[in-house]
Image (cartoon, rainbow, N blue to C red; front, top):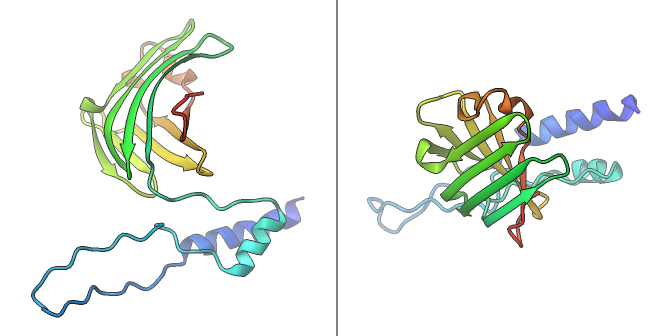
Length: 179
């Protein structure tokens, strides 16, 4: 099993480092400023050989298109973790985000867009806490069906040791349901 993992890892690293040459915007008037056109994806296409190697092992490329999702959901999982989420992201721009996660027997974590500033839109949405620079919230697409919302270094946004038990939130792109 390990024999085929090393070549695939090398292919993935090389594919991630590849870049397409930039084409400057042209204008009939050199002094005119042209808006930058946005590529459909921030990552260049994999070579056909890399695509075949990945497909041979059932590995699909990660979707790097901008996140667009709306959700207002509540859910309680099997172990009693209660999640309330309100989220609106359009083309990678977050316009609404609040999450309240009550982890049974551990405490509560709260996140609100007013306490964050957005640092990036692609390939992942990145929100950084305004007062706690270690605290980040990342959002990315999972095979176009789901959006993952993950929290890093946000102990101060949680009571007690709740952050140690905080898992990412998954949102279905089409329905807005969270899991």
